[in-house]
Image 1 (tube, one colour):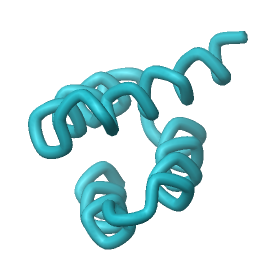
Image 2 (cartoon, rainbow, N blue to C red):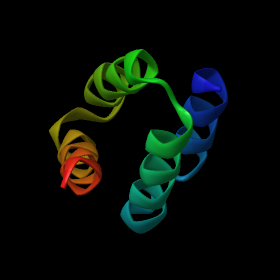
Image 3 (tube, rainbow, N blue to C red):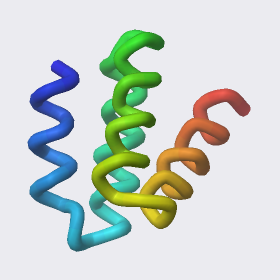
Length: 63
C-alpha cells in the first residue's frame, strides 16, 4: 500500500490541496511504520514545503 500511495502522491504533487488530501488518506490506511517511511520519503522527494503539509496532517490525526 505504501508504494501505491507514493505513486499517487507523485501524480498529485503539483497540487498542494490534492497532495494534502492524499496524505490524509494515506494516514488512515498505512501502519505506523509505513507512515514513518512515508514521512521520510516526502521530506526527501518534495523538501520542506510538502513535509510541512505532512506535518499538518499528522497533527490533525493526533488531535
